[in-house]
Image (cartoon, rainbow, N blue to C red):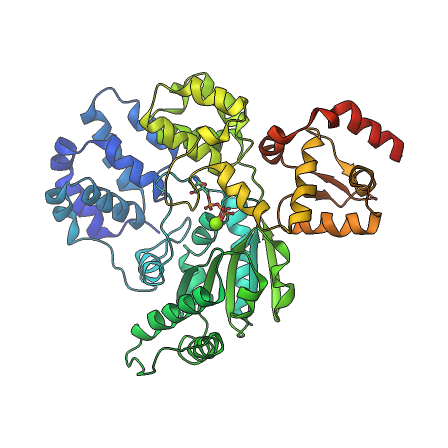
Length: 470
Ligand SMILES: Nc1ncnc2c1ncn2[C@@H]1O[C@H](COP(=O)(O)OP(=O)(O)OP(=O)(O)O)[C@@H](O)[C@H]1O
Ligand SMILES: [Mg+2]
């Protein structure tokens, strides 16, 4: 949809004033994060010789964009403390009522923003790249919940971008309007015990009740069953056709507390969680597979550099990150603060020194090793040790269960069960097109396990095992 007439004439009216005062490089970062400006457009504008030329080009582009462009530009002015300029645009902000407009690209209207912020859905990370192939896949599954309640599971290994993806998938006007007019409610779960879970559900019920015209005067539930019943009542009677997003679920007993015949999107590293609940089930696997261009884009955005201005180490860094959005973002955030450390971080990555690559952020873990450790810690003791043995696997080599049955000296059926557990928990991958199935680790998992590699199980030994099995 084109830019509303009022907004357009407002931009034209104040064009010269804006061109005089704004610093486009500051504003464009926000507009890229909002998805209204592409990196190429930003680069074209930044290539203009002077600040004024850049401002003229940005205004020119804005006039060709839709309402979202105007809103994003306005928000960027506010964030960059150009309050007086933002005031000039304020009166002509496009309408924000539901259904007032839809964007032509991803449907992220201010109605969407309101619904999501009311439901506690996190915003995009400061540096964000789109992953349309996964977003569309999740949306397609969510559309299937339109007719009947059920579960959409987004699963994948640590830091593959599941939570960011879940929040992105619901950032869509049409989806909310058609499928979840009752709202979208986000609940961060993580590793919880029963009392903590009850508190979580209780606070969700409280949040839902507060938003009602006539909040109930119920006392807070004082058992998990009571909390579950309260939530069932609220989702069934007061918020029909709403979506609950359960972020980062580890335990199927937690999931059972939400088995209340409602619509749920959950993120987890454990694919098999929904086995224990009832209703329609759909799943989307998130591969840790950012391509080189997206990886470079993340580094460029963090370091405020143009793509072609990135140093020669950038490409190697992205390669070493093995497609993990988490690792590229960690390095990007570190480089933002220490722009002279490209070579240093590349060396750390090459030497698998993940402990040296750490930074606090809104993500739950400060570094990759912590994020990965969390998955291994929840394995039963005996399986944890077996998993560590997988450090003997070599890059690009896939092995059948038989090889591991020799390695672990266990019966093949037992080995199959253990491997299935690892696969379900996103600690191992399986190539099911092959008969027998072949198992392999993601490059990053191999790197993570490599310090544990014992000389005893060098390549020769493993290949020996491999051949003796065939
Ligand atoms: N599309 C993206 N664009 C830019 N950065 C991203 C994107 N997706 C993920 N990231 C970065 O990777 C980090 C981890 O992402 P996210 O929290 O979604 O991973 P996750 O798969 O949910 O991990 P976990 O299994 O630990 O819950 C984010 O904090 C962010 O910095
Ligand atoms: Mg997550």
